[in-house]
Length: 61
Image (cartoon, rainbow, N blue to C red):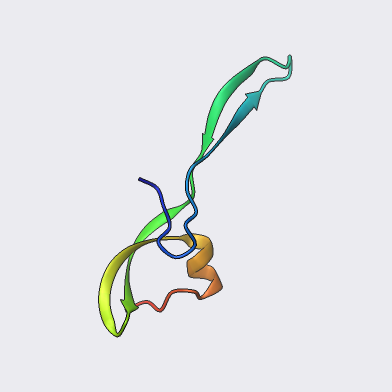
């Protein structure tokens, strides 16, 4: 599933509302990337959101 292993960001649910105010469900998914990162001194492939990558919370291998 779309889940960041650093911050735990997951899929959000809400409503899509048209101009005439008809309501239907919609989904917001985080931008998850598979990245080789250094964790506990070892290189490991993890799923990370791009906001964590940009913030420098992950040390890429």
